[in-house]
Each structure stands twice: as C-alpha cells, then as structure tokens.
Image 1: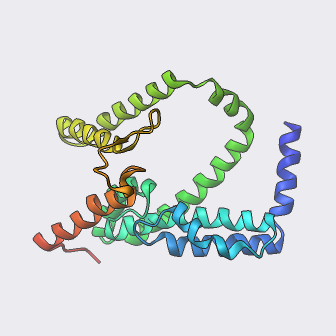
Image 2: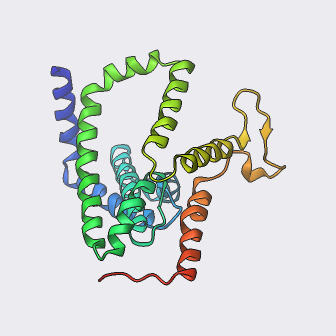
Image 3: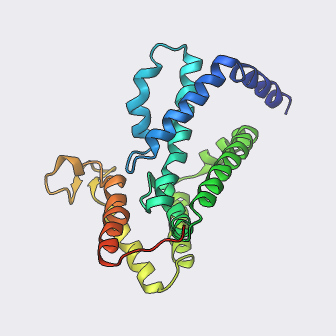
Length: 232
C-alpha cells in the first residue's frame, strides 16, 4: 500500500504541472471536438491527431494523447443524445435513453448527466485500477479459453434478459450479431470467411458502418416517414 501512495504522489507531481495540465486540457478539448463526429472513435481520433504530439516531450505527449482519447470517448455521447447516432461503440447505450430525453426537450440535462457521469466514472475507475492493478493482473493470467467463452455466453444471456419487448426479437438480433462477427479472417487458421474477396472485410465489418446503418440511416428514414415533433 505504501508503494501505491508513493507512486500516486509521484504521478500527480508530474501530471499537475502547469504545462501538463494545459496539454491535458487541450487534448480533451480537441478530442471532444473530433469525437463528436459520427463514426470517428477514439482510435481513429488518436491516429489523426498523433502528429501534433511529435514536438512534445514523451510525458507531455502521453498526457495529451490520454486527453484526446478521453475526450473522443466522451464526445461520442453528444451525437448519440442529440441525433441518435452514436459517435463510437460505447455510446450506443447512451442513445437509448439520452435521445429520448432530447426529444422531450431535456437535451441539456442529458448532456450534463453524460458529462458528470463520464468525469466521475473515469476518476473512480482510474483510482480503482491503480489500487487493484496487481491483483487484477494475476487474475487475468488465470483466465483461459473456457473462462472467456463463459464470459461471452454470460454477456449474451444478459443481453436477452435486459432486452425490452419481445424476447424472440432479442434472441434473433443476438444471433444476427454473432453471424456478422464471423465475417473476416479466422484467428486460428488465417482463412478469410464470408469476405467475398473484398479486402476491407478482411478485418471484419467496421463498427462505424454498422452504427451509421443501424442508427443513422434508420433514423433518417424514420424521420422522412414520420414527422418528428420535439418539446423545446
């Protein structure tokens, strides 16, 4: 425990300098602005903004990249709430309730809750990971194929349990998702599955394409068919 506090004090001493705080703020700001764009996730944002850190020292560059990642991760919730198009994968759940609040004229409240929740959860999660990093590493090394398979099955079962409406539709959507996940290169044999000779399918179906198709295009077509009225 003593090593934990000494390492945390050293880390805060480096991170809380004026220059590093400025880099963190700039990274969060730029990452949020880019992350708001639908389909541009944290990884793509870091890839685009990586050159701006070339002239910085390694510590400052890592802090700025962390800020860009965090900002892009949060920025995806903005489009999910306002236009029902998740900016990246983790914003899909935000679109379910956040967009409904926006349609009722409570978009500001939804954005505020997302910002406060993101800050609180990120802070608490960082402290918990710092405190439990060593035990979690030992636990992760124990996991094998059987445990990972059990986790995936449990996740699919929870997806059915938490689904609203028809259970049959929930199971059907899960099966469709599992089938779509098989597209790409097999990890064991290296053979391409259901790629139809198209190079861009070798790594699987990109999430941005699925998100824009399921949420973006579907939302546009629905609004063309049914005129939507919002409370302001």
